[in-house]
Structure formats: structure tokens, C-alpha cells
Image (tube, rainbow, N blue to C red; front, side, top):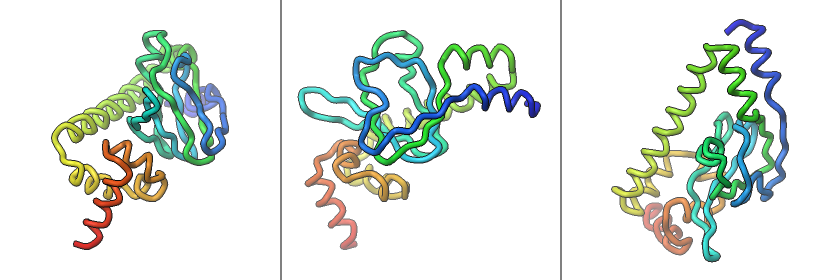
Length: 176
């Protein structure tokens, strides 16, 4: 991209600050934008029958959205919550589509972003289906942001175990 095209892309993003523990989106709302985290971490989760299941986390320098809601026009099934004070850049869907038309090189960037996101989701699904809770925890240990910045109850939910089971796993692994 040229410098002027890059400036046009950057100028299309707006800024948003979400305080710790606040929600960017709640189930039932409509998603109209793509988001990029400058600082902070968000948790994407489902809540059904007074039980929460964490689907994923997004950290600095990551894009995120509910692509199903964005593309279908249906309400989101997720809640997206800041786990720290977050500075977020966002661009509405129509503006990004216009930029794709105006700056064809941007399409490759967008494709690579969403291909990477899809690969990460697939790794998560396959890992959840094929790994034991201990193996999932050992894999999570490789991500320092996840281990240091995510509260234990959300980490347990993400791993598909109870907080008590997570505590037991942590004790077992630190003994070895």
C-alpha cells in the first residue's frame, strides 16, 4: 500500500475505551464492526442457564468480532467482556468493504487475518475434542498472557473444567 492508502485505512478506524469488567457486546445485540485491541484483553463467552462458557480470549494486536452476526445480520450469541481496561480500534463493516473496493491490496491483509483466526479456532476445537484436561492446561501454559492475565475462573471455563479441577491440576503439575 502507498502511504496515502495506509493513512486512509488508519483514518477509517475509530477508538473506543472499555473499562475493566464492562461489556463491549452482550448476547442479542447486533454486530456491525471489526475490532482491534491496542491494549487489554477481552473474553468472548456464552451464558446459558446461569452458566458461562468461555469460547476464547483476544489480546493486544489481535482482531476480533462475531463474524456470524456481522455477516448474517442476526443477533450475537456471545458476550464480549473486557478483562482489563481496553483501548480498541474499530471499523464498521460497510467502511471496511468500501476500503476493500478502493484498495485491493487490503483484501489480502483481511484474508490473512481471518484465515489465521479460522486456523486458531480449528486448533481450539480439535484440541478440545482430542486432549485431556491436563493436556489442555499444559498447552495453555505455553501462553504467558493467558496464564498471567486471565482470572482463574475464566481460564477454567475456557479449558472446560471447574475451578476446583484447575486448582488440582496446577498443584499436580507444580509438584512434578
